[in-house]
Image (cartoon, rainbow, N blue to C red; front, side, top):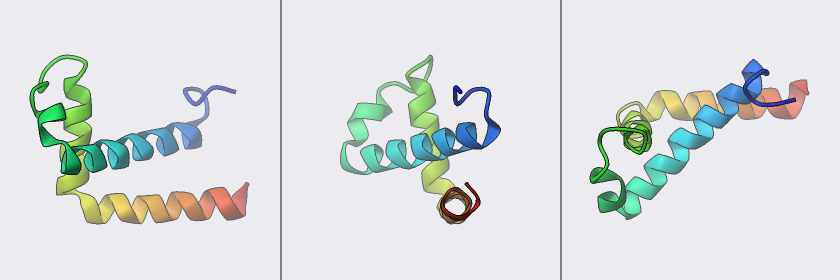
Length: 72
């Protein structure tokens, strides 16, 4: 089953994208800063979400890890 049709898998993919883009932006900021619009701008926006809402993202990551480990 694809992650697009399973809501929990889609949430995991989005959380992983946010965490990965934030990590990349911390070490290589110019890599994402030059693309702020278009399709590549989506990754810059994920990095901004990860930086500004880091407390909420970490709580959601812990909740998803708990649900994946113990409910599946």
